[in-house]
Image (cartoon, rainbow, N blue to C red; front, side, top):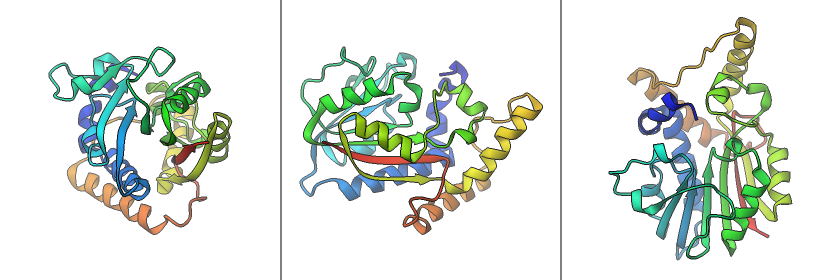
Length: 241
């Protein structure tokens, strides 16, 4: 991850409309699939400074994080002792399997995505759930993907195939942030024509930020039945097969 972007990630996560709207969608999805008795253990892969761990804590007794970028984990954070620093591979050996593993916009950073998914499957309980989001549609590639060192933007079909080949049964999948398809396509085209970077990772002014958050939330509710509509992100829920 670009160091400048990494240093501002916590601020963006807490305030930017895109992160706020994504968190609500993910939380609502988890609330819908969690068993009535809850889960015992959850792992959030690519957790950064553990910003999503408090939300996950309402669904399980034990919530842990895994983060490869040690610089993103604050040493004085109260969550520091629940975050493992390291790669998602055979070197990471948890004390017990997990009931849910979440990967929020993480898979696109990993060159060997199949190995990462294999590791997730091995760390899940027999009925364990994998929940992930990824950037969608390669035609929407912008400088934001370059800054974040993305390997790929996924189609829903390609993502489903990859997860199924890793030994999972896909329970549901969908695109979201549908309205961003047009603007991101235009920005990507403009960047390639002009040869410079147009995307800036910063929180918009308060009124605009609030409007974009509200519009994104409205879209999530209004278009939830139309999972096939293209969007700039994709969400997938799978169970260990």
